Length: 148
Image 1 (tube, rainbow, N blue to C red):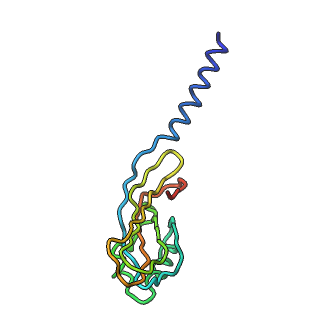
Image 2: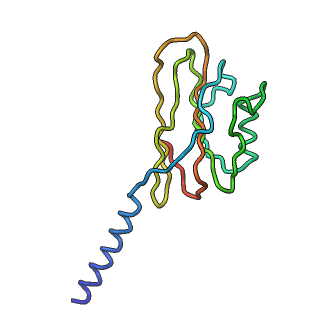
């Protein structure tokens, strides 16, 4: 009888651990900047980035704004990386405007953070080359980030 109780206790313990990993909760985030680069000046690269330090953040700002004042495009360019990390999604270059890329939801479980990204189709057609992007900040964490 003791063996059966021990085995059932172990099974219950493993089942409850698996269940805790699968439970997700919404994670608050705030948009740092969302828009697009006209003429695809960022490059042809479609990227999903997790930025956890000031140097990498500064490098991205410089790359995205080679011919302009950084603060004009990045009003919240100062990020406290002791408290936050930055999530960046950059779409591919589009041959006409009207597209957007949106981080619509961020959830987490005990091990991971899940970023839900949607690419919206154009509502109208503009004869301009664009590259949509969305940049948000979330509380700093050591969890693995997964883009969906």
